[in-house]
Image (cartoon, rainbow, N blue to C red; front, side, top):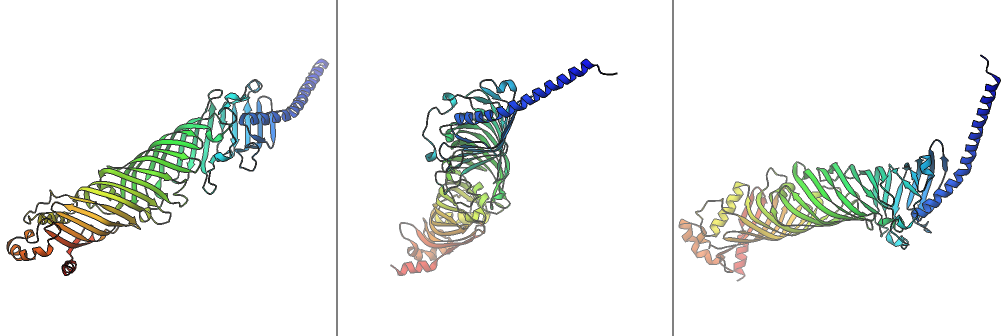
Length: 517
């Protein structure tokens, strides 16, 4: 059926109107685009008090507002000699038409690619010019959602020789909860060593335009199934959770860690748990511990000090302090001694400087300790060793017929130095009922080999430590060993291994002592 002349006229007219609208839209957009570009630069400059650079920019208005751009850079005013505060490789903006043209403008979604935020040291930050948030500044837009996957946050330390504090954020989504209020966020951070993903949610902002490092941040985190074996000489699976609050350049963190299979030596594991409070200082990249409360099996102790940023990863020395006023000894020994069972049971109190130098050898071989200790109510797990200790005590008390070992406990005290896996004990005191022994020597943690020399002061005389005819024969030599108010003073040597120690009387030192009268 032929189309009527009137219909053809209407179709041509409609096509002409549509073409006119299209041409008008193109003209409007082409003219609006530079206006929008100028407006965005002005709004960002006002909101963030920064010098703004913007690369390519395009915008469409129908059927919704959609804008894209690249190379958006925020500079500290007048300081283009410093790294930019914010750099964005590419961005896109999506908004409803009505929301975009009302005041304040509402942006439904802002997508950022290649977001880099750099917080300079305080000495490079300008003097405060007013409010710490946006309350004193006209806010021209509200961001309902921001997606910035693959973002980095870097805080530069005051010392340019130190490494910056760097957070690599693989996934980041933020939402506005109200004008001039902090944005809520959910993020995932890739942790390099130990490898794993840290998941966090919390609040960020408002952005502090006067001093970006003072921008508030708070939230909670969870870090699970991190393999500690990337650090040579350590093994175990770390789980940690907690919270944090503060500002970008100084964040207080509190939480707990749990390593059910922590080990220094292969095959010897202990359950390590901690409760900690720490401060991550963006001005120097250090983490200050104040302090960490740790539980190794049933052994409780504290650790405090400062750890430089990425110390384990980047081969830097770690200096800490550790101590306990009294806790179980067994679990400490299991951790450091590769043996079926610990050589002794009892309690330990200690205070020590802990130094872990950089290197490729296992941690136990690099670990350095310098401190003091006391061991209380010590009983040896080897029946043979416990028998020897008990026999020493009974003889020292002048009761050589007593063979009971169950009631004899030893006490130890002294200074210690650990270097290259060898424990030096320069002023070791060893006491059992009836005997006071002073020793100087060393002990190898892994092999268990020992070598000590010292003096044993015993309550009983030499003859009182024997029975029968020996008791009578030895009475004349009692004066040879009696001195310093003790019944017997014996120069002794202890050698062998922890499982089979050898006690020997140093007769040569006795004779030299007598010749020196």
